[in-house]
Image (cartoon, rainbow, N blue to C red; front, side, top):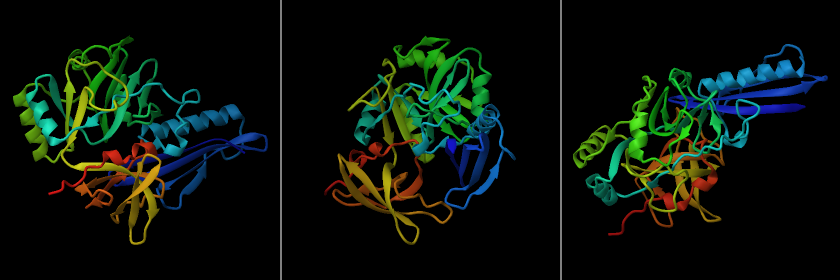
Length: 348
């Protein structure tokens, strides 16, 4: 009988791996088994216990195995989100501030408005680092996750306690906000005050504070630099606003403008010849939005999974035009894949 099990994914560059671990009862004692390999392939199997052992010993082996994978950046599959790296933790209760999108006209206004500051929109995975007695990495859903050892070590090297918010890319965390410092909740302080404190923390190269453009001229320069380097986009933040968890129904004190359009969609079906069908939700209704090709060097995502695609524009009542598969999204729910995120072709 299986008492605990977890499925972990690791996706970075060309790597797309899965790791399964289980703690199972056998003949009144317990064994720890594992399986690993590239996602979609036949997994190699093994055991950490050549013969059954007492539960306490098996539990230590199991926890050590899962934690070692978490330190290397493996994260739980969405169907096993409740499995975390310590037995007494499911949800951290920490939730990040989410940004509403704006159009080009709004972006131009924000660049001229001195109430709004600008930063690069990093193209990674949202990650908060909470350092107290232990260090916990947290995803945008508020669940503890695995993180690269370089980021965890960089956080460990800083004196004091803190809760920071950023975007993880590879072995680095690009941090842009500070929520708690040395036991004090500073969410109600202005972004300007929080950023000044963040810049004084003193992180090393694996945790970097995102550069901020404050004046209209600085924002224009940043915008042009980001466009030239094919960055994902630019973020605008009202520098006198507090930190507000969640996403407002509209507006908000933090906005994002992408230089290209992306959408989070649900894989409704795996087609022949390396493509998948996509759909989004319009209330309770499922709306098909076309097909996207999966490159030969990428694993085909299964039906029911959530993927991120880049596209030129959407046709009302039709498909996404020129979609390109970007990556699998294990940090989103199907409820995030709504039709309202799509940008439509303007009628001439």
